[in-house]
Image 1 (cartoon, helix red, strand yellow):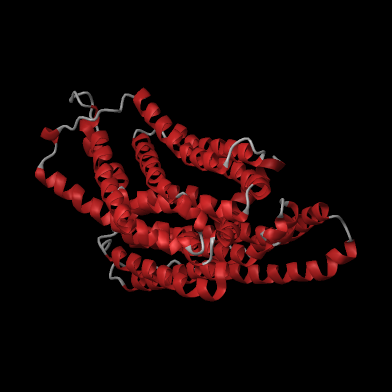
Image 2: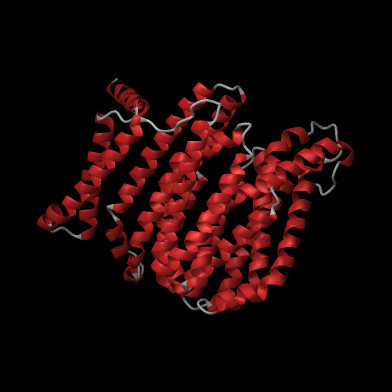
Length: 492
């Protein structure tokens, strides 16, 4: 629920507040600062968050220790602190080269570059405290803080700056402070649960357990780059193309990010089931689950992207200063396709990570990271923001193509995520794009209605055709069965 509420608030803020009160350069500034902080903080974690989740069952105490959960909270704070110190030292060493790199095209970022370490610290411990709450099965409040609280606090900062009550300097400080506030709120919430103790139960930590935790944490530190590939785009754009174009890219990426929202929920549901099947060595079940998850992720993500695609012109016409951001249309489509690819085939990553061949994921992450960096370097110079979006799409496509081929070749079984349902869905989408082009060229000029009414009728008609095609061609027997069951309940 918090995810969808956050998306709704983010939609209003991004398209009707940011575009009205902030310039493209100022939007780009906030995006680059946050993305830099998120990338640095994810590395500074040193794999702690994944370790907390994996090893908490071993630390969980039932009153047999005077230290809550044998001091796992203290470990989760201490290890990232060491990571942050390493980051701070690297920041000091490379500060001048970074300022030089961004100073040419993004001088505004150079003025506030000194705030990046502070923002990194806030983002780091906001996530650490949120993870501590999640292992206690108390995730609702931290999710609300992240998805709703930060957005509302930032909204207040945007409005105060937009009506000239505060200066740009104060606005940037308030913007960074929203993450500091989130960190404090999560810490206070953990304190209310009685989970906080900076003491570590050393008697509980034997050498073998420490070695296992260190090995797993280092592995997860390497794998964290895969989840942060989209962050490279804004960082490269800020350095090579300037903050104004980064601002346009930011608004476009907000639109494309909607495609991936259902994936967060569906993925959380499917992973434990897949993990169990892999653990039991039931590869027929793994293959069945892989195909099911991949198909339904493809259905949901392509449907959302299609509804966005047929309404893009309307959206840019309605948002304040929309003409300044209409150049991001290509970015929306390419990033949207990248989200479709990632949503549809991320189950392959889950299968590999849960299997005994999980170490191979390091190879594929290295390939994905190097491709993303190399393609960004080349394509941004030639194609600007469209090049950044294209780099993400190409990197993900190549990554999953290699990964699917590898999974199919493993002696664990023929784990193939492709099915006829996916081929049907792709064919339907091609036909629906053609239907939209015909609608926009022939039907809409003949109707001559205002932009909002026209968008509503277009969405109803084309969305209805898409639904009819998916159900009529039986792309997913599961979905057809659910619809049939609902209709029977209504009739009864």
